Length: 260
Ligand code: CA
Image (cartoon, rainbow, N blue to C red; front, side):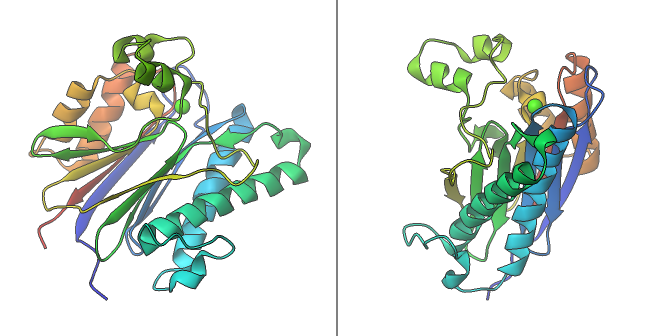
């Protein structure tokens, strides 16, 4: 088996300026090539529980199936049109959704909780990017910022239909309304994109507390700073979101692909 691409990473998560708790969760597991950001919903304790349950479930499944064959996407069927990594990630998200269902079944207080999840899973041939909800994954390549995920959100649907501009979407009162989430319902549809990471590229996984207050150009500027450490860049992204009001929890997870 070929080794995973060598990389550096950094992550910061912050409650922002308006909220007392932080309902975002994340996971960094370079040993199995996994990086996840999740943004919980459902109010206070429930939101924190939802994002943590999801992140832990995704992490556990990816760890258990590291080096495994395709049968390990059980109990979900293997989709031969995408890579083994994409299949594992999709199965991990669906199991996370079932864990949320069990947590809700065990506790009345958690009813209505849900979470987004966005993940990158590096494999020997490339990387799989999966998401449900409106946490995003971007890549900065050759100085250009590209969004690899399409938000499952009401405003994104309006932008796609041409009835809202991206700027108006950022200010819309319904900007936080997601149309798909891990909520413990039926097995969710999980969007998966496959990419081949190249040396010098930077990937950013983030919650909506970052991109609803920062335009892409600003994110690109900060992420592309080649003089600052990745940790300083993650801190600068959080600071910029807070300077812009910090209305929501903010998580920024950065991957920098090294030369092989
Ligand atoms: Ca949020």
